[in-house]
Amino acid sequence: DGGITQSPKYLFRKEGQNVTLSCEQNLNHDAMYWYRQDPGQGLRLIYYSQIVNDFQKGDIAEGYSVSREKKESFPLTVTSAQKNPTAFYLCASRKRRGLSGNTIYFGEGSWLTVV
Amino acid sequence: EDQVTQSPEALRLQEGESSSLNCSYTVSGLRGLFWYRQDPGKGPEFLFTLYSAGEEKEKERLKATLTKKESFLHITAPKPEDSATYLCAVQAMGSAGGTSYGKLTFGQGTILTVHP
Image (cartoon, rainbow over all chains, first blue to last red; front, top):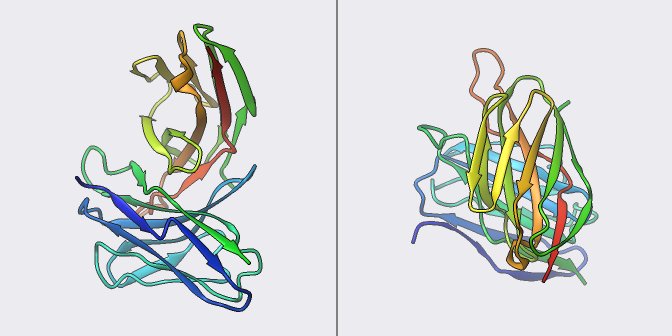
């Protein structure tokens, strides 16, 4: 089945450590996104990418980095510079063209906890 | 700056008790308004996209409507399995000559609980 796969589902990070969240999609979507969800704050955009080898900062990019070497993959690295990384991270994708090109679809999310 | 406000924050209903959720928005040119359903610990599940004032869409017990300033998600005769957080988001038109990157601005969501 086509979809967006995020891994791991649960991740624990020690202080000063970088961690990488994986996001893979087999929907043949062009654009991919990373959102962060905190209780009571809704979803906030971290980074987005419209095409391979290109990405832009969203509203809360500080302390995060991404890469887009393949159309299917958009990994997110949470660096030690991110002061409050504990959150639910959501990867999403969009086709960009056609009748459903505006709709953004989400993966199942990854929980990151600082220990 | 685009803004989305959802109300109420939480809504408790008895099974079969119809009600509506509200999503008020301000956006510099609306490309689309989206409704998602989110279960605890899961990613948001797409429900509807509305593009212009007066548009309505239905899916089972849910009906979404759109005006120039707000959207309503009407729930008719809800069942316990409709319990979830319902998220509203707006997508703005891209800048002139550019390509909209499809950014969604979300509200905080409405937590719906339907008791049997």
